[in-house]
Length: 514
Image (tube, rainbow, N blue to C red; front, side, top):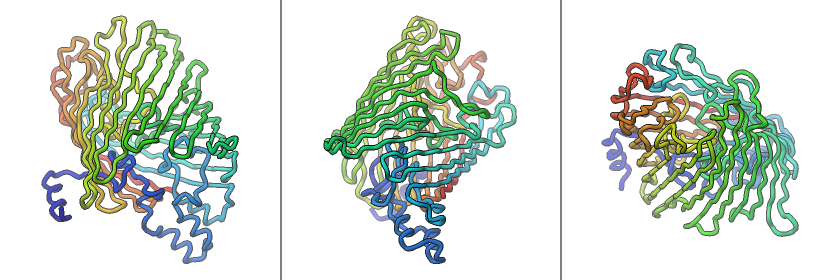
């Protein structure tokens, strides 16, 4: 298909799309690696070139900074814990200051404008249904010690704040604001050939962020303005990229918008995670997570959950079908009530061998809800500490859909016009899994079930442009065609004025890393 005809067909849909030339995680339009390199690093970094031309850095320093193959990449203490794309970029100050290999320094700032109309959360009834526009600012500093030695240390501080959020009815909580806090403060100990077996083992201790699997249950938040972190221990043993086993025992950090975050002795989280990549067409994960949350004196709010599940998948490749299946089952108690819930996910995708490498993916998610609130059985799935932007759309001040009481099919189309531009369109239809349970974390519920289950459908357009690994832009728009559920809600449900009308959300973000 010629580029012109492809472009015309996309325009005729009046929709942008998003995608990636490769393949790992390309289905959600994230920036990805290809043959060990970041695709947006195929062009020369202009800042490094200027520094080199002005003799501010040496030839050796220039080559070291521009080599992203991994040969000269010195792993930070959290390399095993988090996605590399979130923690690896060219650190200009390291080259400019000619810092030794055992010392690393990095800064990051993301500024995002976002706005939406016709709020639907019960907490926004006092706002009279006014449009909520805010500016989210997230700044980070990273200081690493130890180089590529067996013992490494890392400090990462984060300041998250939001502006224009002081009006009545504006959305604000600890997912948007968390000022001047310690995101990570950890040490790691690595042995690359334990007892001559060729296996690598890592031990982490302190405060850390973590990604597991597809990040649906435990994640280092990306789009959200604040980030999950944990105090405790993490261990892994691995054989190259073939398999690895991870285990952890931590206390989740409870965020406070102004004061320093803290952990509680009566909030514990632990688990194990196995990843097998022996077969490219049949990669498998298996996991078990346990949560014991008894922070509040009211025993009815205590959560004691065990979550077990697995994931089968095949990474996307040009000209091939791929898939992902994940199932999670949750048992335990919520207060004095028995808890039994589950979550099911299915992806089917195909990457076409055409200009712009278009990729089409069909999704389906089912997260159980509580069939009869107030009885002896709680059925609402708890997503624990997972991320949802990559699946359900932007979070931030938006994020109406979450991984609980949800029945949602959908599709998305992804294209890559150039190696560093990613465009996508996503469409999902959403229903409540159980009509009498809450709609996610919105506070909305019709205990009679007479409002039905139709939440409507939403269309998302997204464009990402990574100029270099140090500068990228992200722009998106969502239109939510609200369903009959909002028209039928009783007045007692607390829907804000005009909350039954369709909502539009827009955001524009720029991230600078040095």
